[in-house]
Image 1 (cartoon, rainbow, N blue to C red):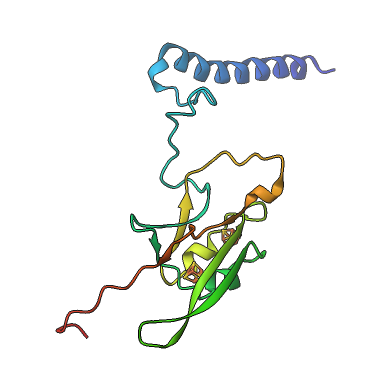
Image 2 (image 1 turned 180 degrees about the vertical axis):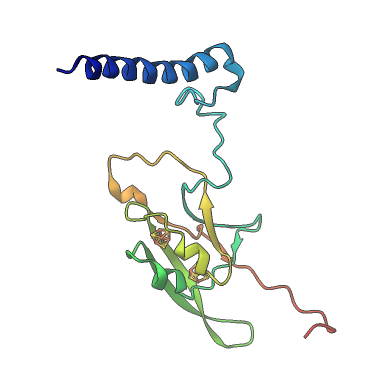
Length: 164
Ligand code: SF4
Ligand code: SF4
């Protein structure tokens, strides 16, 4: 082997080791800046960032009401069939038959977190939840009904007389 190449390779290895150890050494003497989380010991205090995509959820208010009309647009836009919308028909106060959501079924095990369902929902009824522990022994547990039991569609605020 060429002697220059031999020593060049040794020098390159030492240089790259030094570059890595410099970063390690910096955080060793500045422990306050360490961002590594002590998981799972910190389960109770761990907060994910706002942009974290844990799972698709349906937002409910304090009256157990949501904004999902059961239109099915999220189901149509999901590229891999992770959403199933089951609707029901009821008669409203005006005696008119209307469609309501019965079950908004979400298969987390198939979801690729592409966000198309959330982006295309015309009612902003669904969003990202912060849950991050999804390991289960039975994959059926990853199929969820997003509308809570007993929940109902939130009524839209009536328009002021001077509004169009
Ligand atoms: S979540 Fe949104 S897009 Fe999906 S059925 Fe409900 S209102 Fe329609
Ligand atoms: S995030 Fe994408 S893959 Fe997951 S349910 Fe929504 S549309 Fe389907």
